Length: 179
Image (cartoon, rainbow, N blue to C red; front, side, top):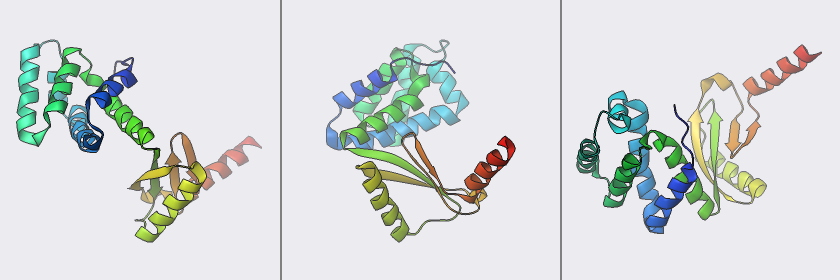
């Protein structure tokens, strides 16, 4: 996949055009489109292929607006991205928008991976602990991964906290192989 420059610039343009209270809803709408681009080869080809002209792409976006219920601002932004031929970078742009929004709200995104579902009580304790460590509010996403065997992995930004059995066994293996 071609690397698109200035993804953050496109994300900033979008955030500047949207009212603050509308941002969470519009991010979700953009995530739907981004997911569609990632998962549906035909839609991706329609949006990025030079074989389709601007009008055909805009008609497709208008159809999505009707079917999915996308706001006019998101529709206009999608048409803009299509016009400047960077729809292929939609997943990166949406990720940048979400990250900038969290930064605006003094939040950070965290991903918790555990072998079992985590109770609400433990979620709250994790959020408090991570808030204490990072000094920011944490927006946590939970993923179940039975291959961890036990313990949890937490990723906050670029920092990884791994107390899983799988991770500890990997460290032990590396240590034994290095001797």
